[in-house]
Image (cartoon, rainbow, N blue to C red; front, side, top):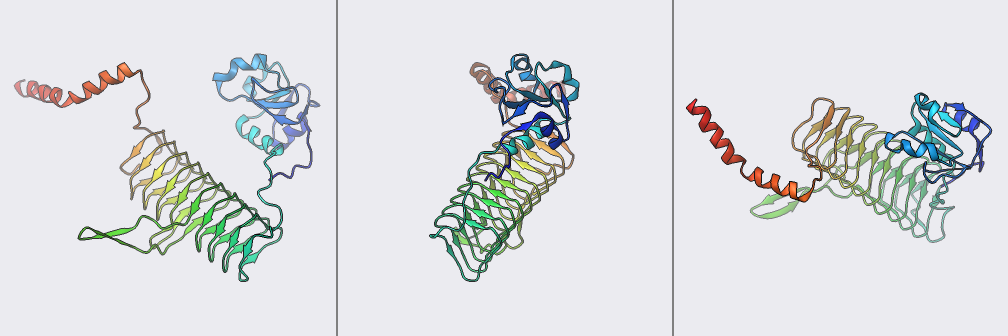
Length: 342
């Protein structure tokens, strides 16, 4: 949803907006964003990764966001900022052209008489709002989304089409949930009785804090008895599974195709890379980074970077290493025998 009041800004205006400094002509007019290699004279780009520094000398961008230490490297006007990526993000928001998820309340939307809708709520076609739902001001819900009984969605939140929000789920303010996501489905709770699986009712719910973003086709399960809790300003990528009774601390990031088993406690400012797996009943302390395709099988109690996934390598090298790995037991036995003789 876009509401920008202007279509172009001077570089000086953008610098004031993000708290940066101008290097060069502050009157350059900027009406969009682009990459260093593709931007035109009316667009602004940024540089943080030194891999792309060679593109800076030939960029056609109208301006580039840089760290102050790189002030002399840009052939075009610069916007100097200690965090160019964050500054770029805030500037890109000014030029966001994403269309509104919904506009007004569609005639095909179904709203229970007991539901409470705040000011300026927008509901797309075939949206279903069940009994006792509470929607805050400026909530926007896309077509075909279902909001179950007793759910609450805070002001300024945006729900894209085809999302399912189960009963009693509570979602904070300014939360974005993308299409096909399911919030509050039953956790995977069963007891085995002589080989027969007996379902355990999942009577908790899901609590999501403010300023969160949840990607497409992500599932966050409701708690078995206590609640599944997602803190404030947590960002969750596409196709992530968060099982029942997990707790995710404020400002954490979970990348795509990661699966987190039940009753995990993830701290604040944790970053989990794509394709990771986290065993159930594990605690991860604050300020941990887990690289892609890592399997976490025990508690992590110290901040730092953790890895277990094997990086790609030429097939011939991988095959040789696989053979060597199969021989490691025999090698161990030989070394042990030599140590005993000594």
